Length: 107
Image 1 (tube, rainbow, N blue to C red):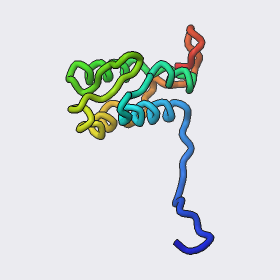
Image 2 (cartoon, helix red, strand yellow):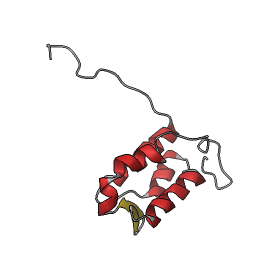
Image 3 (cartoon, one colour):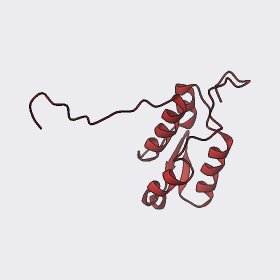
């Protein structure tokens, strides 16, 4: 790299809904998993119902599991995290709009 040049080629700004999804997917790669409630609170958004259904399906398939307040990948699920993220979580869908829900959270 030449002196004075940045190593950063580009960047993008993510909307809060996209940050929520990215945070969830990144958290699944951690040993302890991700606290979805805390993540939703951090971004003031709630994960849409269809995404929560997908999480339930992945749990039924033995790819994700609950551990206390956290959702984490099982050993088998860790092998398929790239597929999980490309499948149900790759595109922020219409369920995340940023509108406040009756509970005060944004949906």
